[in-house]
Length: 339
Ligand code: NAP
Ligand code: F7E
Image 1: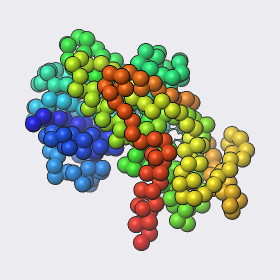
Image 2 (image 1 turned 90 degrees about the vertical axis):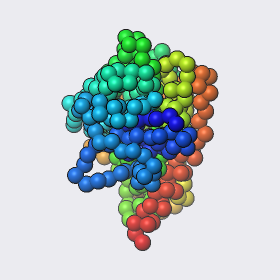
Image 3 (image 1 turned 180 degrees about the horizontal axis):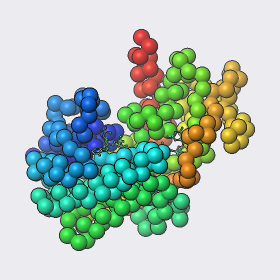
Image 4 (image 1 turned 45 degrees about the vertical axis):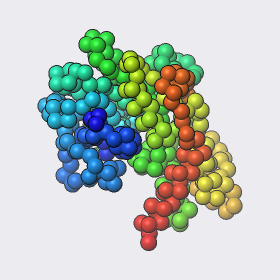
């Protein structure tokens, strides 16, 4: 039986990856932070099948303990302060977790179990002010947030440990991936949750920031398969995982309203832009500048060509299916709330 250690197990990706590895008969260990109130987050339904180890990416002692206890064949480093907007409010914490935390974990592995295979959750945010369209493994990086900068360190330290110590260390440069388990502060889930509340009469308006930003969105379930595939190769390498399509935030909004039978027309520009329900002529979308970022990533479009060719990775859930799954799930959850 193979053993895997997943940091950030109770996050969106951690929970889907744990399900995937359990289905492949792995013994799964998950690193979680201690909180004042015990909350298993996204792994409530599988917590009895997983061995939880308490630890923190900023505390190398806890990571050494975690590696000692689990003796993993594979380590997936998914733990991070992952919300870009928060990285301007907490740049130091973000760097300590997302940058130095990676070194902490790599050192713990190098000391205790250097033959373990390592996956680092890198991100398309490292491309930031994009230098090329589409972005591939060879595109120059230009991060635009403290989060992107910290993740770039995490990426390069992974490459460096591979080259310095011959460790099997991979970096997956994943473009945005979402799901029914996405945190509600991220734009997709904020949209689907609010659309559900508007549809059910609990809210009137969805307030957003930059609706012209373009993202390459996929479903987390598809993307965790690529993480696993990266650790099953003969040689460690870095891969872009993306859908190969880009959509404006505005388009996600229209699709989400469409999924509940509402047709939206956008009027005006900039901070005066509104989205109007064609049937009732009511304003259901507004811009609120408080959601603008100090510096924005305007466009992301990834090329998954290498992952498709070398890993045989394929995405199964399309953009429209993703929006529909998320909206239907939020209609159900909000419906249960008001019962
Ligand atoms: P997520 O839902 O925010 O999960 C992050 C996890 O990290 C949470 O379980 C969180 O635990 C844990 N964590 C945060 N700080 C920690 C610390 N100091 N010590 C230990 N655990 C800590 O993020 P996700 O969407 O699943 O993303 C997984 C990883 O992929 C992240 O590294 C993210 O940066 C990266 N990534 C995500 C995307 C995407 O579109 N989703 C794209 C590219 C890369 P708490 O519950 O205690 O906060
Ligand atoms: O923003 C715009 C916002 O917060 C997407 C993380 O998983 O993917 C994620 O980072 C876009 C941005 O995700 C609102 O300005 C407009 O342009 O959903 P997001 P993100 O910043 O792309 C990458 C790949 C990661 O690695 C990260 O961990 O949407 N936007 N209005 C808004 N965004 C939010 N959150 N809220 C708004 O009201």
